[in-house]
Length: 227
Image 1 (cartoon, helix red, strand yellow):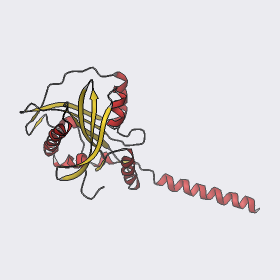
Image 2 (cartoon, rainbow, N blue to C red; image 1 turned 90 degrees about the vertical axis):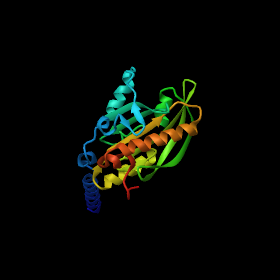
Image 3 (cartoon, rainbow, N blue to C red; image 1 turned 30 degrees about the horizontal axis):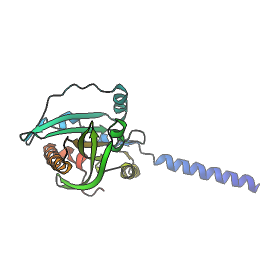
Image 4 (cartoon, rainbow, N blue to C red; image 1 turned 60 degrees about the vertical axis):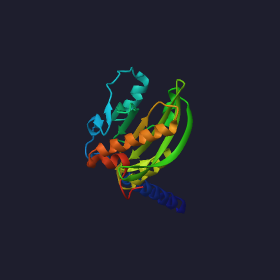
Protein backbone atom coordinates (compact mmCIF):
# COMPACT_ATOMS: atom_id res chain seq x y z
CA UNK A 1 0.00 0.00 0.00
CA UNK A 2 2.72 2.44 0.98
CA UNK A 3 4.63 1.48 -2.14
CA UNK A 4 1.64 2.37 -4.33
CA UNK A 5 1.09 5.61 -2.37
CA UNK A 6 4.73 6.61 -2.90
CA UNK A 7 4.38 5.91 -6.63
CA UNK A 8 1.28 8.13 -6.82
CA UNK A 9 3.03 10.92 -4.91
CA UNK A 10 6.06 10.72 -7.22
CA UNK A 11 3.80 10.78 -10.27
CA UNK A 12 1.96 13.81 -8.89
CA UNK A 13 5.25 15.64 -8.22
CA UNK A 14 6.51 14.90 -11.75
CA UNK A 15 3.23 16.09 -13.22
CA UNK A 16 3.45 19.32 -11.20
CA UNK A 17 7.05 19.91 -12.28
CA UNK A 18 6.07 19.31 -15.89
CA UNK A 19 3.14 21.73 -15.58
CA UNK A 20 5.30 24.45 -14.01
CA UNK A 21 7.98 23.98 -16.67
CA UNK A 22 5.39 24.19 -19.45
CA UNK A 23 3.89 27.33 -17.97
CA UNK A 24 7.33 29.00 -18.06
CA UNK A 25 8.08 28.19 -21.69
CA UNK A 26 8.38 31.56 -23.46
CA UNK A 27 5.79 31.99 -26.19
CA UNK A 28 5.85 35.70 -27.03
CA UNK A 29 8.22 36.96 -29.70
CA UNK A 30 9.96 40.11 -28.51
CA UNK A 31 10.15 41.22 -32.16
CA UNK A 32 6.34 41.42 -32.25
CA UNK A 33 6.40 44.07 -29.51
CA UNK A 34 9.21 46.16 -30.99
CA UNK A 35 9.10 48.35 -34.13
CA UNK A 36 9.21 46.34 -37.38
CA UNK A 37 12.73 46.57 -38.75
CA UNK A 38 13.99 46.14 -42.32
CA UNK A 39 17.76 46.53 -42.39
CA UNK A 40 18.06 48.05 -45.85
CA UNK A 41 15.68 50.81 -44.76
CA UNK A 42 17.12 51.28 -41.26
CA UNK A 43 20.74 51.63 -42.45
CA UNK A 44 21.08 54.50 -44.97
CA UNK A 45 23.20 54.09 -48.08
CA UNK A 46 24.96 57.32 -47.18
CA UNK A 47 25.62 58.94 -43.81
CA UNK A 48 28.30 61.26 -42.47
CA UNK A 49 31.26 61.04 -44.84
CA UNK A 50 30.33 57.53 -46.01
CA UNK A 51 28.53 56.31 -49.10
CA UNK A 52 27.75 52.78 -50.25
CA UNK A 53 29.50 51.39 -53.32
CA UNK A 54 27.50 49.53 -55.98
CA UNK A 55 27.03 45.83 -55.18
CA UNK A 56 29.43 43.59 -57.09
CA UNK A 57 26.98 40.72 -57.56
CA UNK A 58 29.35 38.12 -56.09
CA UNK A 59 28.23 34.50 -56.33
CA UNK A 60 27.01 33.10 -53.01
CA UNK A 61 27.75 29.53 -51.96
CA UNK A 62 24.30 27.81 -52.16
CA UNK A 63 24.97 25.67 -49.05
CA UNK A 64 26.05 28.69 -47.01
CA UNK A 65 23.09 30.65 -48.37
CA UNK A 66 20.70 27.93 -47.19
CA UNK A 67 22.13 28.16 -43.65
CA UNK A 68 21.89 31.96 -43.68
CA UNK A 69 18.24 31.78 -44.74
CA UNK A 70 17.53 29.35 -41.90
CA UNK A 71 19.31 31.36 -39.20
CA UNK A 72 18.33 34.89 -40.19
CA UNK A 73 15.22 36.70 -41.33
CA UNK A 74 17.14 39.68 -42.73
CA UNK A 75 20.73 40.20 -43.89
CA UNK A 76 22.46 43.36 -45.06
CA UNK A 77 25.89 43.46 -46.72
CA UNK A 78 27.31 46.68 -48.11
CA UNK A 79 30.70 48.21 -48.80
CA UNK A 80 31.17 51.88 -47.92
CA UNK A 81 33.85 54.40 -48.83
CA UNK A 82 34.60 57.87 -47.46
CA UNK A 83 36.27 60.97 -48.92
CA UNK A 84 39.70 59.74 -47.74
CA UNK A 85 39.30 56.53 -49.72
CA UNK A 86 38.87 54.33 -46.64
CA UNK A 87 36.76 51.28 -47.43
CA UNK A 88 34.65 49.45 -44.84
CA UNK A 89 32.75 46.22 -45.43
CA UNK A 90 29.54 46.08 -43.38
CA UNK A 91 27.62 42.91 -42.60
CA UNK A 92 24.51 42.79 -40.39
CA UNK A 93 22.47 39.63 -39.87
CA UNK A 94 19.17 39.78 -37.99
CA UNK A 95 17.05 36.92 -36.67
CA UNK A 96 13.55 37.32 -35.25
CA UNK A 97 14.02 34.19 -33.14
CA UNK A 98 17.09 33.53 -30.98
CA UNK A 99 16.27 29.93 -30.09
CA UNK A 100 19.04 27.41 -29.43
CA UNK A 101 19.15 26.21 -33.04
CA UNK A 102 18.76 29.65 -34.60
CA UNK A 103 21.23 31.73 -32.61
CA UNK A 104 23.51 34.07 -34.55
CA UNK A 105 26.83 32.61 -35.69
CA UNK A 106 29.97 34.39 -34.54
CA UNK A 107 32.96 35.24 -36.80
CA UNK A 108 35.26 32.99 -34.75
CA UNK A 109 33.36 30.06 -36.28
CA UNK A 110 32.33 31.53 -39.63
CA UNK A 111 35.71 32.80 -40.86
CA UNK A 112 37.71 29.56 -40.35
CA UNK A 113 34.79 27.61 -41.85
CA UNK A 114 35.27 29.69 -45.02
CA UNK A 115 39.01 28.97 -45.07
CA UNK A 116 39.99 32.30 -43.49
CA UNK A 117 42.15 31.64 -40.41
CA UNK A 118 42.09 34.09 -37.51
CA UNK A 119 45.45 35.47 -36.38
CA UNK A 120 44.38 37.43 -33.31
CA UNK A 121 41.41 38.15 -31.09
CA UNK A 122 40.81 40.71 -28.34
CA UNK A 123 37.90 42.13 -26.36
CA UNK A 124 37.54 45.88 -25.98
CA UNK A 125 35.05 48.63 -25.22
CA UNK A 126 33.69 51.25 -27.58
CA UNK A 127 31.66 54.39 -27.03
CA UNK A 128 28.97 54.29 -29.72
CA UNK A 129 25.68 56.17 -29.75
CA UNK A 130 26.12 57.31 -26.17
CA UNK A 131 26.57 53.73 -24.93
CA UNK A 132 29.75 52.05 -23.70
CA UNK A 133 29.51 48.61 -25.29
CA UNK A 134 31.80 45.57 -25.43
CA UNK A 135 33.22 44.78 -28.86
CA UNK A 136 35.39 42.01 -30.27
CA UNK A 137 38.35 42.78 -32.53
CA UNK A 138 39.78 40.06 -34.75
CA UNK A 139 42.33 39.81 -37.53
CA UNK A 140 41.69 37.30 -40.31
CA UNK A 141 43.97 36.26 -43.13
CA UNK A 142 42.17 36.77 -46.44
CA UNK A 143 44.27 35.30 -49.24
CA UNK A 144 47.48 36.68 -47.74
CA UNK A 145 45.97 40.04 -46.81
CA UNK A 146 45.02 41.04 -43.27
CA UNK A 147 41.34 41.73 -42.59
CA UNK A 148 40.85 43.47 -39.23
CA UNK A 149 37.30 43.00 -37.93
CA UNK A 150 35.18 44.75 -35.31
CA UNK A 151 31.93 43.13 -34.23
CA UNK A 152 29.36 42.71 -31.51
CA UNK A 153 25.99 40.98 -31.27
CA UNK A 154 22.68 41.73 -29.61
CA UNK A 155 19.98 39.61 -28.02
CA UNK A 156 16.87 41.75 -27.85
CA UNK A 157 18.17 45.01 -26.41
CA UNK A 158 21.25 43.51 -24.74
CA UNK A 159 24.77 43.52 -26.23
CA UNK A 160 26.59 40.17 -26.16
CA UNK A 161 29.94 38.90 -27.46
CA UNK A 162 29.91 35.13 -27.36
CA UNK A 163 27.82 32.02 -26.89
CA UNK A 164 27.89 32.21 -23.08
CA UNK A 165 26.70 35.81 -22.74
CA UNK A 166 24.27 35.15 -25.61
CA UNK A 167 22.71 32.26 -23.66
CA UNK A 168 22.50 34.29 -20.43
CA UNK A 169 20.68 37.11 -22.24
CA UNK A 170 18.37 34.58 -23.89
CA UNK A 171 17.53 33.06 -20.49
CA UNK A 172 16.81 36.47 -18.96
CA UNK A 173 14.24 37.16 -21.65
CA UNK A 174 12.87 33.65 -21.21
CA UNK A 175 12.15 34.34 -17.53
CA UNK A 176 10.09 37.32 -18.71
CA UNK A 177 8.19 35.06 -21.12
CA UNK A 178 9.89 36.27 -24.30
CA UNK A 179 11.70 34.63 -27.20
CA UNK A 180 14.15 37.43 -28.10
CA UNK A 181 15.32 38.52 -31.50
CA UNK A 182 18.98 39.29 -32.16
CA UNK A 183 21.62 40.30 -34.63
CA UNK A 184 25.31 40.52 -35.27
CA UNK A 185 26.95 43.73 -36.52
CA UNK A 186 30.33 43.38 -38.21
CA UNK A 187 32.62 45.94 -39.86
CA UNK A 188 35.87 44.91 -41.53
CA UNK A 189 38.49 46.27 -43.89
CA UNK A 190 41.71 45.22 -45.58
CA UNK A 191 44.97 46.61 -44.22
CA UNK A 192 48.23 45.57 -42.61
CA UNK A 193 47.88 48.08 -39.74
CA UNK A 194 45.05 46.65 -37.61
CA UNK A 195 44.95 49.49 -35.07
CA UNK A 196 44.50 52.08 -37.83
CA UNK A 197 41.78 49.93 -39.39
CA UNK A 198 40.02 49.59 -36.04
CA UNK A 199 39.96 53.35 -35.65
CA UNK A 200 38.44 53.79 -39.11
CA UNK A 201 35.87 51.08 -38.32
CA UNK A 202 34.97 52.76 -35.03
CA UNK A 203 34.39 56.08 -36.78
CA UNK A 204 32.25 54.33 -39.38
CA UNK A 205 30.18 52.47 -36.77
CA UNK A 206 29.62 55.64 -34.74
CA UNK A 207 28.37 57.46 -37.86
CA UNK A 208 26.20 54.49 -38.83
CA UNK A 209 24.49 54.21 -35.43
CA UNK A 210 23.98 57.98 -35.33
CA UNK A 211 22.12 57.67 -38.64
CA UNK A 212 19.75 54.98 -37.28
CA UNK A 213 16.37 56.32 -36.20
CA UNK A 214 16.00 56.49 -32.38
CA UNK A 215 13.25 53.84 -32.28
CA UNK A 216 15.66 51.25 -33.69
CA UNK A 217 18.89 52.27 -31.98
CA UNK A 218 18.53 50.09 -28.87
CA UNK A 219 18.38 47.03 -31.14
CA UNK A 220 21.94 47.85 -32.25
CA UNK A 221 23.67 49.11 -29.09
CA UNK A 222 21.47 47.95 -26.24
CA UNK A 223 19.46 49.94 -23.76
CA UNK A 224 20.40 51.58 -20.46
CA UNK A 225 19.69 49.34 -17.50
CA UNK A 226 19.93 46.09 -19.48
CA UNK A 227 23.12 44.07 -19.13
